Image (cartoon, rainbow, N blue to C red):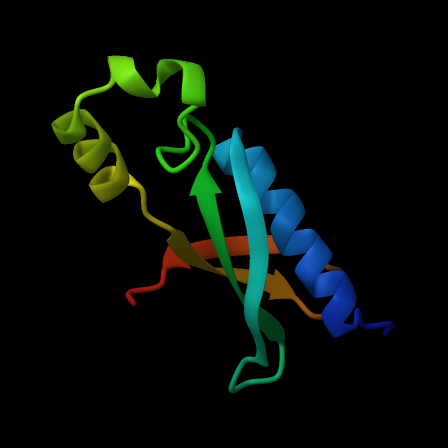
Amino acid sequence: MPTIDFKTAIAKAKDGAMELFGDIQNVNAESVLLSDDSKNYEVTLSYDLKGHDPLSIQKEYADDVSPLEKMIGIMSYRKNYKIFIIDKNNGELKGFKTQNI
């Protein structure tokens, strides 16, 4: 039975993340492990929800944003981590779970 490699498992996990969560950006593979039973890949991805990046306030609008608004925006910006379970034999996404950092 043919099996997929690490690179394909990462691509399948990224595709699954995009399909499930939609508008995400900065998707990165943080780790890839073979499960204890050697049947699945466990691919940890990090990503940001797409939206306003509080660190890139345009210069012409910077005076219109209060320091408190800037601070709130920066504090609400965080990276998400999920572990995607990919079948080693067929590349099927079997599920995901939250990775606590």
